[in-house]
Length: 534
Image 1: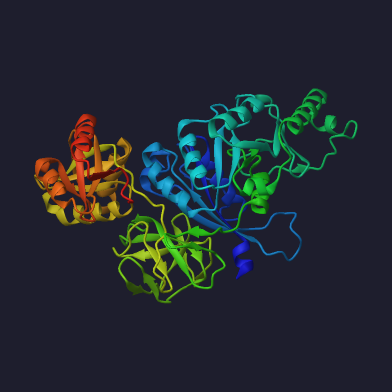
Image 2: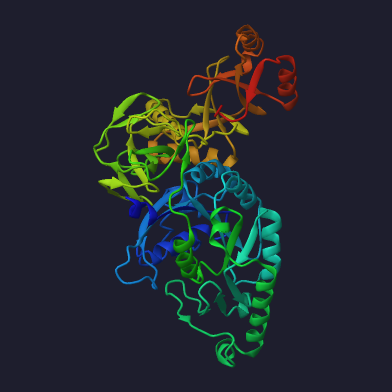
């Protein structure tokens, strides 16, 4: 069991949109032997699309709107013969801010993260937000500075920006030789090897073992000027940045930095080879009752994501379960803590984007897909009998609201089913207004409304239309013990702004910031919550 746990690496790839995250995922799959040709993620002329972007709307728009889960085995070239390969579980997350909630939840299911930063644009807004979530959870991060083959910022300036904006110490483990049109490659500080750049989207770059202190050896490969500059840069790197210590990285105090070009397959293998050696194997998970260690004999896990229609032909929902401890076995009975029922799973699956295969067992760190016919909610816990609750899977208060109306009365049933399944995914939230009974969808961004409308039409054959509603914030309300009459008074007074969520909890739909602050002042014994986890 210990060997199975120690060989697993479960991580998320996160970044601002367009920094090259999905391209990087694609290249990692190429090295893992999962795909023979990398999809042209951005090119519209080529009909291939990224393996991890499998929804129709993702292929059309060239963006990721949902987290994809992929797994493969990988053994670095320099591993001793007979070594067991590492088991890699990648979660490719959406970069677009409208889908940030999916990414925040995904970060609860990983042991480490790779942050992709665009070498020309540097640290962007979404990267900052995601790093905040990593800091809150003490998640170790590695930073990959992408697009070095384009004109961009000076590497030292980028490192300063990373430290300042992401509030973490950094240590380069590779160093670029020039950038843009004159980019010649990187020197791999971690392996002390030179990697020369040849732009090729499919092939791997060869490594050259170079003694940078031997006279003439470096010059023969990169020319005199660049050789001199590289030596100066490396001297400066050693002088400014602390020696790399794996324990500092594992305790999230320092972030190793790599440079490369994901599109041209450059610097990615170096990143992967170093990553599998230093990244953490599955770590303990905090439950409300206690801390759960991966080495424990009994199985436990939690649902961090639900995806509807992974196979549109079967209208199937899949719940993604992160295994936290013990061994998951197909067909064994497991306690669904929230309902108190025992469930068996005859066809648990593991994924390569939407290609999936049935598995018989899974270990801590693995992500298992469980068929879901409506029994799961995000945050549900499965165990071998122990009652415990994993925490940290909040739903945030939406910032945009619209009434959802049926545009085709003949398809009422399909619309209802579609709304139910899409809300289970957590992409948006459904509230029913108690005053007029109308359904309100709340999201964190405009694009989610388009995605919902598109998916209802294309996956459920149902049409909806949106109608405007002017609201400021949705907050879940509850009263302090003994003040139930004050809660009833509040609900009476705000009757037309009261709604119920899908769990039948009271939600106050404030139409302005002023109204909300006045309500908080006037009703001192009512608590207003802006996340649904309380």
